[in-house]
Length: 262
Image (tube, rainbow, N blue to C red; front, top):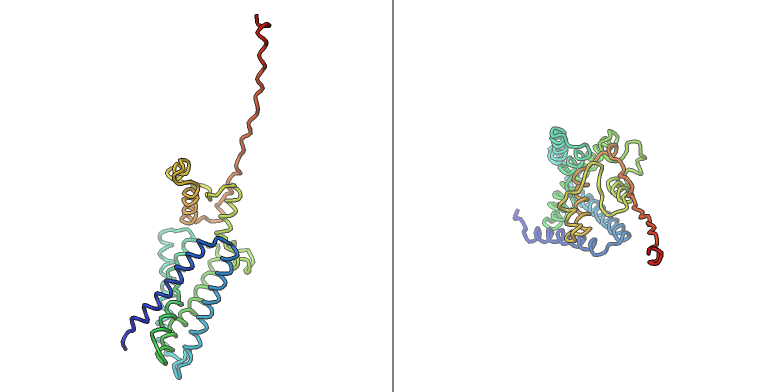
């Protein structure tokens, strides 16, 4: 079979354009409601694409997604499971923090099946298309089962920022990383987010005070420190509330008349 490079490039162009447009829109439209609905629309589009790949992959007679040879399931599922196991071993060996281990492990085995699905839809026809779509569809099923089980286990083991005793519905609907950042920012009553024991470098602080970097540079530095140094919830102490300096007026005695001095 001849590889259709034009269809491949068109699919990649659509994906890159969609990502770029999303980043541009999120930056130019700083409204929370817009972000919420855009996120929901993206989730709806992703689920629709998965359903489409599942339907098309079962349209091939005798080669439905659940009628393949055992080597198909083993070959597609092996990379996800192997990457999850190896990444956990490596991050534990290098003594990363537990939330960092979970994040690194998921990033190593999670793949965006939407790109593969789009390429398969554009490059193949007929039975070949059904066979090709079976790969991203089944890999997505494996991701859902393996990563979902891993996340539940990590949460209950205390490896995530979500407390293990929180209700399940709250854990899957609340971003504890963002929640912690907003809580610390409110308590400090300033834009920057700092953690206990983590301070912004003098370079960024001096730039902010001199007006070169402004508050934006200071906030960017603090945000970078926050996301790069993921804390455990048990070790994070709320920062002290900002103190206000109250100036007490000093009473100056009035000068006596010149005549009285004489």
